Structure formats: structure tokens, C-alpha cells
Image 1: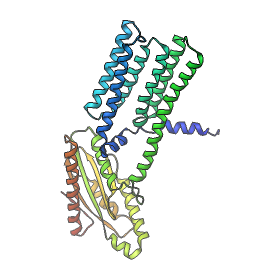
Image 2: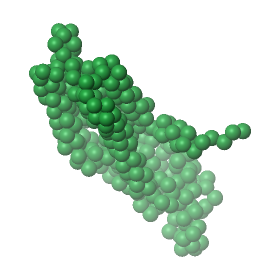
Image 3: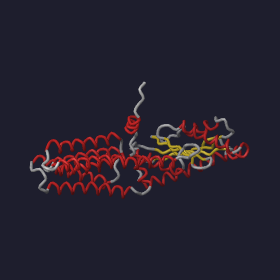
Image 4: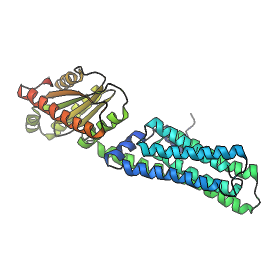
Length: 361
């Protein structure tokens, strides 16, 4: 069997990595950076439209009626992209449509220049959607954007010809290609490192489950990304019975093993639109998004799974459900906090009743 070249392995890994749209959007939203990010992207697309209009009014613009009309349509398209970001944060599909339209509009405006050097230098503008793609979307869209840049460069060099020094053309070509590779890959490298740091910071180091802050961030991300209606959020609070006794009698090492086992059990149970986290010493929380307000079997499954572990512990479980669609971000946050309080109260009722049981609110 022939060994695979390392660079090929790296390229395959790069090509297969998922997009970052959901977690980057969640990161910006949770840190109050939605508005400034929207304003920045809207400003960039608006400026691109202004630059396009200036170019179309300059002597370098083509004079043919058809191509001029197409170019002005591209300018309107850029203004439409601006309006999208002024209106609000786009969905993932809208974001993909935005980057494709942005790319196409720039390509049309480049083709509408009669001076090939202006057109060649204009290909640098494709580094803007390239950087956006690197931040939010997958390698396939990066490759597409770069392919368009290479195609446009080739058209300017070979289709139109140049009445200038060849060295100047080569220098401009190399600069354009450098910008269209350096900017996207530089942005993606930063996003990749940020993603690794966030991944490590988001998880409890012992159980591998989400920590408290990340648990609620993930709920927000799950609710924001779902368009299903009706939507009900089930909140489950889990507290281990007799865990302190286990720690005192058999030591913290055994206690840690028990917590790891509980984390593994919850991970095996959690499937689909379920978020699981360790929110305290022996406290865990589970959030499930469902299409019905009926009692979920998940709470009892958790109780049974903990009781089946090879440790002298059980679980007191509290569960509550509430409808969460058609709510604003602020109201939804209040509802989530209220659900946590009610689930916690239900859990304490189960614990005072002897533990190893579930209480629904």
C-alpha cells in the first residue's frame, strides 16, 4: 500500500472540515458583537457598491450597453447585500446566498472594465468575500472563490492583452493571487485556533461535558438555529444522591471515576437536539428541543442510567417544559432562566422525597 503524501492528507483534512457559521455566529452574539459585525459587513458591501459606481463613471468602463446594464445590476446587487446585513443577522442559507452574490457582483464589475490592468488589480476585491468565507463557511466555497479569481486573472492577461511592461503585469498578477490566498487562509488559521481554544474552554476537563457557561451558550445557539414550529424546550436538572458520602468513604479518585461514568452515561443518552453539561460539583443539566409539550422519557432514562452505574449513587431529577418559538432573544433568555429555576426546584422535591426519582413540573 502506497503511503499518502502528508500534504495530501492535510488538504483532505482541510477540505472535509465543517463550516464555522453556527459557532462563530453564536460566539459573536453571546459577546454582544452582532451589531458591530453587521455594521462592518454592511459598510464593506456598501463601499464596494460605491467603488463600482465610481468605476462605471470613469473612462476605463466599457461603453457597450449590455455590459454596462449588467454592471449597474451588479451594483444594485451589492446594495441588496448591504440591506441584508442592515436588516439583521442572516440565516446560514442567506449567508451562502450573500457570498455567492457578492462574488458574482465583483466578477461582473471587473469584466466591465476596458483597461485590463484596472480589471486585474480589481481581482484583489475577491479577497473580501474570500475572507468572509474563511471565517464562516467551508473549504469548498473558498476554493470556488479562488477559482473565480484565477479565471478573472487569466481573462485579463490572455484575453485583452497588455500594452505595458511584462514585469509590471507579472508583479500585479502575483500580488492579486497573494491577496486571494493570504487573506482567506490567514483568516481561517485564526478561526481554527480560536475554535480549538473555545472547544477546550467550553468543556469540563473531567467529564468532557459542556461547562455551565457553554451549556447555556449552546442552548442559545440551538434555539437560534432552529426554525421548527412549534418548539418546546425541555430543561432537566440532575443532582447525584449520596455523592458526598462516596467521596468521604472511598476517596476523591473514586468520586472522579463516578463523575466520569455519569458523563459518559449522559452522553450516550443524549442524541439529536440535546445539550448536556456539568454545571456544578455533582450537578448536571440537560436541555432538549422537542415538537411537543408531552413529558419526555429522557428524564427517567437519566435516572435509570445513573442507578445502573457500578457506584453507590443515584440521581434526583427535575424536569420542566415550555414553548419557546416566536420569542424575542431577550424574552427567550428570561424563559430559559425561569425553566432552570423550576427544574432546580423540581429536582429538590425529588431529593427530599428520597432521591432516585423524577419530578416533572
